Structures are given as structure tokens and as C-alpha cells.
Image (cartoon, rainbow, N blue to C red; front, side, top):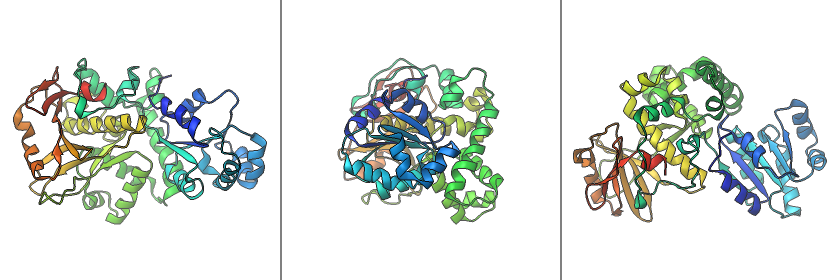
Length: 402
């Protein structure tokens, strides 16, 4: 079992909130982690069990009284009837750590939490394994452009192997697991058990084709009408389906940078798959070399780095304000991190020979009414190099292995 950075946050929330809610995509290890961390006197029930689910739905008050406290309820979204009674219980007793709730259907779970348990619950987001977790380097550090540190170089072949495999715990934990069987089963289960709970998908094959089309565009700008034309459905349907992927945390939409001082900006978001292994599988990439040498390697590398930054921030419950820059002349900056009224511009490129020309688009940010912080080029070079007062060539290890 892998150690997870999020463990520290879970233990803290358990000491300070009456109810803990852990959300995240299917099969990222939510149940396994909570089972590992749950107090010895805590009971665990799963509403995947139809008989237990029926009991929770038909007599929720008796259900909670029967199991007592502290109680861990897995797949809680299957019995929304419980939420009102959970509210009653924790309003009578304000002791922290009474209930742990988890579920894969994030939309339904969070809808019920917001309607019934606001102010009583600590919500934690969980993702698939990060590079650090896969390599047993749990530090609870996040990438901070104000404090960039040199780290041991990551072998490029090993890096692309990580991107190809992704971070699903079961796949990484099980020797000789058939990759095709694992990801095919994952997608089938996701569509059948999660997607159908949110929208009416009459044709599973069409939704699967949509997921494949999205994966091929991993790391590129989202174009609803183009995807709609490819799949043969309306743009409104694509918007609805994209929202499903976002809500269930399969993808993250990296917004376009907004600033009224800069003219001719475009605001379409970029598609970031939160698990690179799933994106590779959906894109019909079947080997590490095919990924590493293929025409889309740069996009997949960019998306992977962005997703690792997001995951590390999520694991430490630190809010993150990130975007990408693109103007109508298609001049781009891959990532802008904003904090404390500073903006930190970052390019991400598959190169081991960086040069200043690769940072030329940073000049467009000079018109912003904000102070420019440290920026640079995240790439495959060996060492952290300073090129200017606040510009660096940044090894990928200094971003994903902090």
C-alpha cells in the first residue's frame, strides 16, 4: 500500500469537524485509505451492499442508531435519505470525528452535502497517485515558484513510463495486470455507475467515443463545436458531457487568463486529464515509446505536469489559482500561477536544451496590473538554472518531486 500525502489532512479534519467527506474519482484509493486511518472504535459500512443500502434508504434514522458512532459510510450517495438524519445527529452532538463519508459519484454526494450538511463538514478532494507517492516521497510540500529548489534529475524514460501508467493504485499495485482489461473495465464501470446517475446517456458507445476524443485533445484548448462535429451530437450535449467529466474529476479545465489590461485574450480552457494513464489508454497509445516519440508527447507532458501540481495542492488542501495565457494571435503561455497579487508565468516543454526564445511570450504579461513573480521553463534539463533576475530553467523534478 502506498502512503498518501492527504493522510495528514484527513487526520486533522477528523479532529476538527463533526463529519469528514472524502470525494474523488472511482478507484483512486478512497476506501482503502480511510480503512487504514479509521479509529479502532469506528464501524465501517458500504452501501454497495444492496441489503445495507435498502436498510439505509427505507429507515435512515434506525440505520444510524443501529450502527452508532463513530461510523464510516462508504458510497453514501446511494442513500440520500441519510443526510437529513446525519444533520440531526451532529446538531445534537458537536463532537468532531463522528462520521466519515465517501463516494465516487461526486455530483450527487456534494449536492446532498451542500443541501443538508453545510457548516458541519470538512471536505477533502482525493486524486490518483502522484509521482511523489508512487516513489515513496511523501513530503507534504507543494511547488512554490518563490522557492524553487534543485532536485535529482528524473530519467526521461522513467518519467514517460509514469505518464503512460498513470496513478491508479490498483493498476500500480498489481504485478502483471493487463492494462487493456483494467482501463476498459474502469471506463465501463464509470459510464454505467457514475455517468448514468448524472445524465441520461442513451448510447454508451457515443459517450466512450467522446471520452476518446477528449483524451486525444489532452493538453490542448477545448473546442465544443469541433468535438460535437466529430462525435455527431450537438454542442450543448458536448458541454453537458464535459461538465460530467469535470464534476467527476476525470478532467480539469484550465481556464484562460483574464486581465482587462491585456487586449485580445481568448478565454477557452485547456483540457487536463487528471490521470495520465487513462488519457493514454483512451488515446490508443499502447507503449511508453509510442507516447514518448509520438507527435502529442509535448501536450501529454504539459498536461501531466499541470495535473501533478493540482494534485499536490489538493493533497494539502491548499487553494490554487492557475490559468493559461492565449491571445488571438495564438501566442501562448502554458501555465500562470497567481497568488498574493503576483503572477508566475511558466512554459512546459519536452526539451533538454532550453533557450530564452522559449520564454518570449512572457512579455505580454508586462501590461498586467500585477507584479511578475518568478517564472521559467519547466523542461527536461538536468539542473535548475537561473537565466535572469526572476527567470529559471526548471527541471521537471523541481516541480513534481518537491
